[in-house]
Image (cartoon, rainbow, N blue to C red; front, side, top):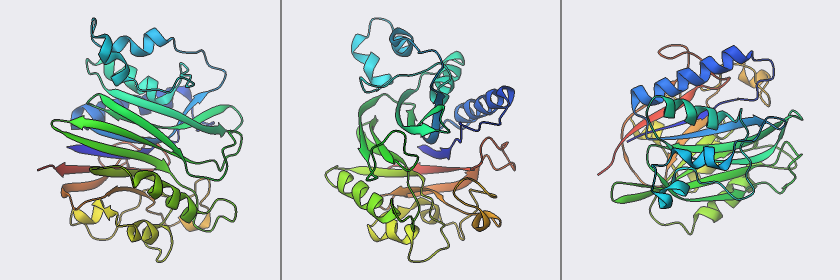
Length: 294
């Protein structure tokens, strides 16, 4: 099984439409070429003024005549509105055009730059059985840029049901929305879940800083799949200055991770879309892990 996390930064306001389309094409091609099973995406945006995608379009990808399958491929809350330029919708359409069906879910968290719905997404080569979302921040204000959530997708792969959690947490020293309280809420929300869980996303916590966010996640028993793969020092996932990281990011940071709640056998873990083997498609690089499931 292959799983990946990527902060897509799809609300890059100064990005030409042609570049955005090329980035999506590159991501779709990579998913298919590498046969990635589950992908967690952060900063998955849509323009609030864009046209709405009709429900029959969203669920039209399910096989004809299999009504019970329709809502296992696109698992969305009743309040969720998908717009035509939604990043994950555009990605799903590209995969479908290439002859592949992926299950998916998306949930909006907050308004970005005054014009975007910014959210989280999980896509899967297998139908999604159940989706839950959790507020992690004190704020539930859609206009507050510090509002944070996590989205948890239960996916059955073969005989085993596995939960994949996508999140984008705040900063350790934030005075109003500190990392620790958000991670506490996430841990509490996941504590009642049974079985295997993978926690993927942008944690805004450098791997080389001690006694802050990275160590705090580990203190809850989460295992860093990068280290389980036998890798040494973490490699950079943010190569320079981005929103929220200024001088600290000049030398590069590792703040994107895939965690497991049990000691899984990791065949490999590597950084992707860094400009080395794959083109850069975001202000973050992605992390790809291959897992040997027993």
